[in-house]
Structure formats: C-alpha cells, structure tokens
Image (tube, rainbow, N blue to C red; front, side, top):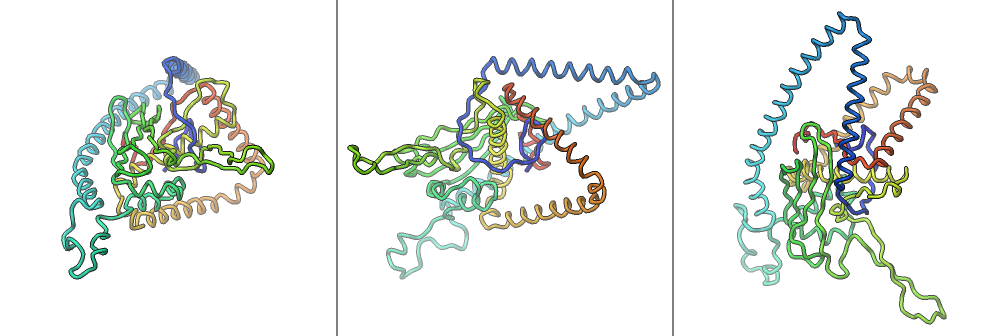
Amino acid sequence: MPPISLISLPPSPPTPLRSHFAALSAEDRAGLVNALKNKLQSLAGQHSDVLETLTPKVRKRVEVLRGLQSQHDELEAKFFEERAALEAKYQKLYEPLYTKRNEIVNGVVEVEGVTNGAAEGAPPEDKASEEKGVPDFWLTAMKTNEVLAEEITERDEGALKYLKDIKWCRIDNPKGFKLEFFFDTNPYFKNSVLTKTYHMIDEDDPVLEKAIGTEIEWYPGKCLTQKVLKKKPRKGSKNTKPITKTEDCDSFFNFFTPPQIPDDDDEIDEDTAEELQNQMEQDYDIGSTIRDKIIPHAVSWFTGEAAQVDDFEGIEEEDDEEEDGEDDEDEEDEDEYEDEDEDGEEEGKVRKRRVELLLGKVSRWNVQPSASSSSMF
C-alpha cells in the first residue's frame, strides 16, 4: 500500500525502527494550528487573485462551477458517512468468524472429523505430544507477508510462536484504530496483550497525528530489541572479566516503540529528518498491513495463497508501468537533458519542503490509503 508522508513521495525502503515515541506538547499543537491557519489564509488569497484576473463573464461561470463543487462535496461527505456505517456493520458480522478462528487455532474447540486424542494403540509419548490447534499460525501468516517478513528476525520467532490472536478496532476520541496482540504465557515478557494505537486527525482524508505502543516488560536477559556484546580483555590486563555493552538491534518488537519527533528543533538535521520520514512511513505500513491484510485473511497468508495474489498484482502493476514507459520512450529521449534538470529541481523542492516541515515539528503525516482501507479509521 502507498506510504504515509508529509507530502506525496515515492515509497522509501524499509528501515529498522529503533527510536522511542513522544507525544506532541500543547505548545507544539498550538503552533501547528497557527501554521495551518496561515496556510489556509494564504491559499484563500491566491484564489482571490485568480478570480480577479478573469473577465466578468468567465468569473460568473467559475462561480457557478464552485457551486456545483459544493454540492458534490456535500454528497461526498454523506458517502463517507454511509460507508463508515456500512463497514462498522460488517465488522460486527465478522467478529463471530474471528472468534471461531481463534478457538480452532488455539485448540479450544475441535473441528468436525478430527477425533480427540491420539489413535488407539499409539505410544503414551505420542498422546502427550499431540499438537492442538494450528501451531505457529500467526507467526507463519506474518512471515509470509513481504512487509512483515522484513521486520521479523530469527530471534523474534521464539516469542511470536506464543502469539494467540491479533485483533483491531476503531477508536473515536480521537479518531483512529488500535491493534491488539494476544500472547500466551511465555519466557520472554510478562505482558499478555501488546497494543499499538494510531491516532488520526481527518477521517475522510486520514492524517496521522501520532502512534502509541505498549511498553514491553521483558524478563531479565530476554529483551529482543537489544543485544549484549562481549569482548575479551586484552592480554596482560588486570581486568580478567569480559567487557560487555548493550546495543539496540533489529526486531519486530520495535514496532511497539514508534518513532518520535525530538522536542528540540536543533536536534533534527536534514539527514535525520529524512530518516524519521522513512521510519514513520514504515511504521504505518506495518500497522495497516496487519489491519487490512493479515487479520481479515490470516489463513490465506498461513497457506501462502495471499502472497501469490500479492505477487500477481505486483507483476500487473509493473507491466502497466513498462507499457507506459515504452509509449513515451521517444519523447523522453528528445527531452532527456531538460527532464533531468526539471526532475532534479522538483526533487530538490520536495526534499526541502519535507525537511522544513520536520524541522518545524509539523507531525501531521498525510496518509494516502488504498481504496480498500481509506475509510478504516
């Protein structure tokens, strides 16, 4: 799905999430509101300037067109409202199916045609070790998805084997959605439920305000988001004990400590701003993938069928892009040097604007959702 960004940008490659999240202060929010008001006033002034350049007859026609646009916008608002109600209705209808799936996956109930216990005459050890439910169901489903597979390390797999269920729900104040990960008792952390909440500002044209994750209560020596490095002391050193230090490392569980925007503007340079941009895009991509793909179609990801569909759709998109490129090949050759200059100038403007917004601590990240998920908030 398309990434989130401050402005429309090409997708960035996945990057590890290693920083912690901090909510905006009241001062930041006030500054953001003032900046948006100034921007709207500026745009209104530009529109007035355009109308003043028109002849009276053309201006009258444009005014009528604006009236038609207002009628369209009213209908569109009703469409979003009715679609949200329809999706909420079907979300409730899905719930019994998700409950049944959870019971089967975790061996709470048995499906018809499967006998209880091992076959008669089987050794006692076979009866004791008989598998219940569908082992590693969620781990396998998540690893089959390309986006999530990038985040899951070999060390993570041990903990994710204890994942029993994943759910999501809408939240209203503020608007957004919450993911819930239910874990069985395990040797890695105390939490039975880990959550990730996304707060959105605009329901119709979603804008990400912030994301909040659960603080994981790791058992001693079991933290998967850090690794301990040991170094042998030099020969002849009085200290004979190994030197140890702790470093952050890649892990799916970094998902629960989302990226933060530093409180001090001076802490953000251009490179840091771009890295933060990539991290925010990747963080939202992971959350929306779990909500829109894994939860509703978990068994298809477990079997690999959903991955094949994803691959096929990706090939179709690439073919369309190649055909468009062939049609325009001659024109591109003629304007090659001019286009490169224009592209470079445009990319420079985009890059500058993105960094300026970050340096200004504007944290409303525009979301361009897919058609299937645009009203999921």
